[in-house]
Image 1 (cartoon, rainbow, N blue to C red):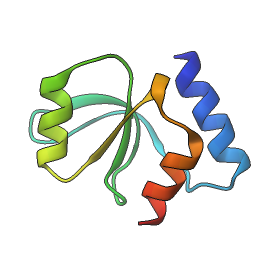
Image 2: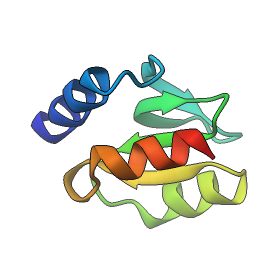
Image 3: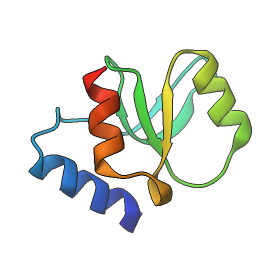
Length: 79
């Protein structure tokens, strides 16, 4: 959760589009920590290969809170 807060704080400083927090996405309603549904970008916490593959197959770009930089999220949001 601290990694998610740190990412959000950095993204906010960089002027990123405001995300949705703590929602469920995809046809299996996967819980994600942070999402930009329009841009199809999500941040997740914890390892769940099935979730990541499922969301990926639906066109979401999945980032992991502990191993992702704000710059990587910014780049994905700009695509």
